[in-house]
Image 1: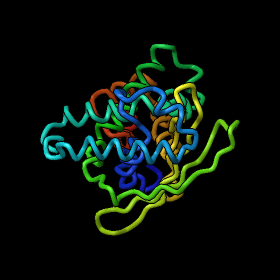
Image 2: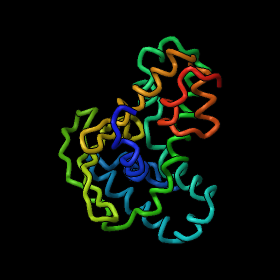
Image 3: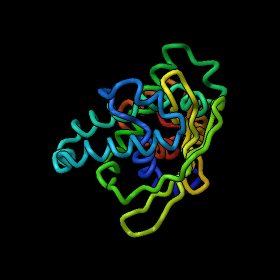
Length: 221
C-alpha cells in the first residue's frame, strides 16, 4: 500500500465498521428509527459488546465462530456494493455482473477474515462516539469517533455513511486522515491493470491480504 500506517489502521477498521451492525435478530425498526448516524454507532456498539462478552474466550479459540459473529453484525449493515464500486473505480463499469458479485464477496470477506480478530480487543472504554446532528432529508453523513488502542494511543476514526431503506450504512472509513477505500483502490487497480480482475478475485478468495497484492505484480495467479 502507498501509506505504511494503513495496515495497522485496518485492524481498527474491522472494529469500527462492525459498530454499525446491529444483530440481524433485532427488529428491523431498531435500525430505521435511529435517525442520527451516531445513534446507530452507539447502539450497535452495545450489541457488539454484549455478544463478545458473553463468551469472548470461545471467539478467540474458534475462528469460524468469530467469522459468524462478523457476518451477523457487520455485513447486513455495510454498503458492500458502494464500497466495492468505489474501490474498483473504472473497472466496475467494465466488469461483468458475475465479476462484480465475486469481487464484492471476495473483497469484503478477505478484509474481514484478515482483520476480524481486532474485534476481540473491543471493550467498553475503547470507543468514543461524538454526537451527530444530521438534517432529516440528508442522505450522507460523517460520524466522528475516537478509538483508544491497548497502548493508550488514540486514533481518529470517521465513518462515511449513507442513508438507505435499511437505515444508515457505512461505505468508507477515514482513519487518521487516510481513506481505506482510496488505499485499497490504489492496490487493486494497479493489479487489475496488469493481471485482470479475475486474477485479483482468485487471490482474494485464497485469503491473501490486499497489501500482499502489491508485492506480486506480474506473477501468474
